[in-house]
Length: 453
Ligand code: NDP
Image (cartoon, rainbow, N blue to C red; front, top):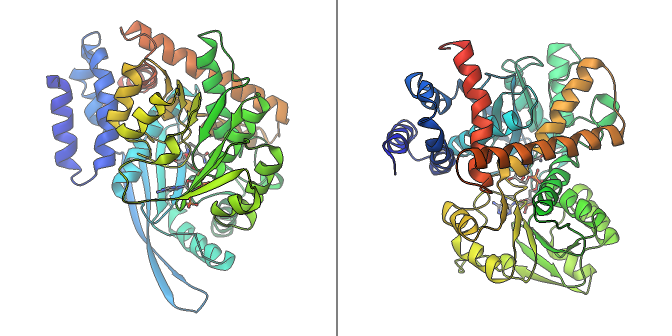
């Protein structure tokens, strides 16, 4: 480890104890930035990296609400406003029992570089709560969202901080949050993205992250003169990102074969087709059921419940060409990565944030497969959120074709910028270094322009 990486990591660990995901995310970025520091001593003298690792503001608050029995419940709410150099803070809200300060700091940190890569003027932030929407009634989710927004509203705004969805926060939750913001502030503005189409949302926003991850894979394949046509794919998750990854894979002639949730996964040898996908969308978005039901409905599929005694996830141990991790962080460990490689997978495009552990990433890079890290590959979601903000400001709605065209153009420019930066800094085809460096340079140069603030 270089003296630069060592000193940054010592500082980050001392200031943020017991936040392993945040340490992991910072480590991955500063290892890439090590390649930049000799060429740019000004970043060291201005302590740009030290400043980028320190959130501009961290907000933590109590979220009290009444359940359906009339009993009080209490959760913790967060918003990490990480960096506003190039635009208002922008990043999703996650509602999941695993949410804590360290996980949100890792996500907010990643968001800074991702948003910069999109070419749109957005800073980085992230927020959420340890609230678990699973098993709650619509009324409980509404009361929770209203209480959450009652505090959050004083910290956000269309020009300050514009949250969106993430795990556990979809169209239903954004609706309840927006309703409460509007009621308290008495203003109808684009303070959230992922809104419904009738009240300021953008076409293609729900699809954007999954579509974008598939476009990114297609861009990587194109560098080898290949396409997704006829390729087999393993997809994890069964939420927003997994669903639209599957849809775009079908559009481009690939054969997706899996879905998962926190209970286990299904492997469908015959492949997931449009009818099965529509059934999963209804299962997950309307009936809010479990993926195990897929194997009861479709006989070509087998369900494998999670076996916590295993040190690997058998989901990643099937023959395929491509993998699209679309559930959560650290879902592919080194053993899973090795299993993917042994099974012939040579394209990994990350819809989820940081789904691969560092030793897994190392294996992918060593084997020189086409590996698109989340901060580049899943930037389509926030990119279309940025386009939603533009449409809100213009008070216009673009067509599906217009937004999808812009999305695919943005994914291509993220791909090309990452590839070019990897090459410029001596590690051709390493999209990890490329994305980290390309995302960093714009933010770092802006911070130099704006002085010590
Ligand atoms: P959803 O809540 O719609 O779906 C999440 C899926 O992942 C569900 O199938 C869920 O299963 C599963 N999952 C969540 N946590 C775990 C866990 N700890 N172990 C196993 N499975 C888990 O979320 P999204 O699809 O929106 O998000 C998925 C990933 O994509 C996240 O990493 C998110 O940060 C990332 N992402 C999302 C963007 C977006 O626009 N939505 C943008 C960029 C990145 P279960 O229902 O059982 O919990």
